[in-house]
Length: 144
Length: 144
DNA sequence: CTGATTTCAGCTATACTGACATTT
DNA sequence: CAAATGTCAGTACAGCTGAAATCA
Image 1 (spheres, rainbow over the protein chains, first blue to last red):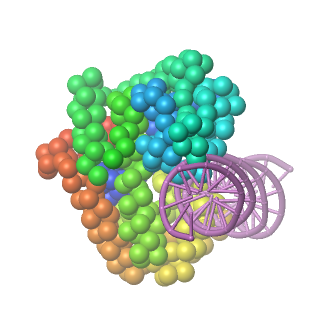
Image 2 (cartoon, rainbow over the protein chains, first blue to last red):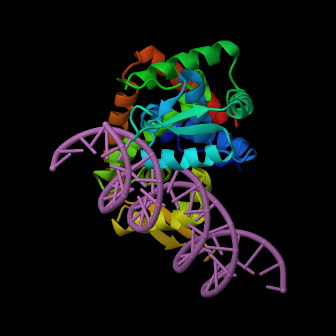
């Protein structure tokens, strides 16, 4: 017996968003774990590749993560030589974080994993439907 | 400065799903906390209202939650007289869980909170767009 | 005895808090 | 001195695991 979820929940868009989103993140985490990394590592490398070097604090703000957690993430990524951390000569409180060539390679692999997860999650939808969904989610994400 | 998130992430539907879903669940949890309850309490009461009494194990399976966590949830709900727990006379291993009148009242209040959160989250979308989004998410949720 | 149901104690990961040293 | 940056230790919670108690 497939155990139907309660209709009064599946009729709520909020519920579906939370459920589907959680599944997506779970699948991504599972795939990235194969490379010993987590979704936040992907996000961090992506931010550095998209925008260039950041002060650690700005990186944390861009990803909406706490500075204390960012410190740990960067420790892990620096330990694999995926990024560099250098004191800002102009303001020695700041640490400038940049991506290394190895980091870019890793990012490519991680992005590939994310795309494969996306194919899995969005499998029930046609290409046009995926575009529509993406547009709607972008509006929800932006309209904060 | 509003700290733009990395485009290579926002171009991923998976990322947006996870982000928007997490925000939705977070807002819901915040609103329900005002009544001393959490999203799982709402889900549990909704399942009982939709389908009638359940054996504890069936309830856990329907909501895709672990039986050990279900035991704790039911403790909390029973402590507020929102549900009843009785041994199944036909199979004394099973505990039959049912919703009380007070539970139905609480469910009404919790559902109201959930609808208000939904209005907040879906605010940027028109009514037609909300319908489209709901339909797409239903397909993603069902197509497992 | 085997298997199902429930309960409990504990483990892990994530998100967050607060205190601190360093530098401006 | 006050404010900003980064580091570290510790807290809270959700999700999960495993073992024991009860019963079919």
